[in-house]
Image (tube, rainbow, N blue to C red; front, side, top):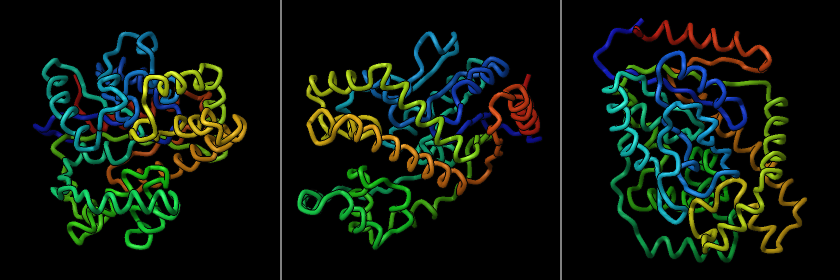
Length: 317
């Protein structure tokens, strides 16, 4: 057990559809937590179905933070997440509650836990324009291969569809001569917090079935209608928010590029790949206590195991 003057920070991570929400609510009730969303998409207002955003009613009276804080045309990054989350952690602690990060965006969560210092490299608009032209002429996969050739680690972590971050990774190398992955690996990874990080994992086939079921449920809940509404408001794939999983695929359907069936098949495939990248990211993080939740019918056992881990890390009232 650790005794420290550092603020305590409980963290729950894992791939999409692994079951973080249900466990987080129960843990928050037991330990007097306020939850800070560690999800890069749930910050956007009006993007609810496609992000599997927890509703106000589903929050069951437990305070949730960093949900619905910006519009889809506003920029948000790991550095933004740090700027929002760091004072929240201190405020929650000052109220006598336990700050609890819950989410699946690896860079956001790791950068907060270990106070990453991000590159001060400024933008090179001429370089960005050059990459935009290359993207238009050759496509997302070719741009992604450019990154893979010079920074395979970053390429593994970034989806080809995430062209803004692919270009930024290329730009950082262009400006500094140092790859993004090298800069991240060079972080000291010393935490300003007394950390307890729980990672959820499960059998891969079961996870993929849960992902496909979740997507089917999103479609029943109105994913297509949500994307159509966002397009009607003028939000396009020029915005990072609209490049998110569930949005870019349905946009292609609405624009006539795919049938709905083809768009759904693509979305399920891309989400499976995304979950695999999430697990890869978290497995490279230190300090994670892994809990296998494959037998999700045995919820109480998983909860007890997590509570035992927390008790071993924290001295709680």
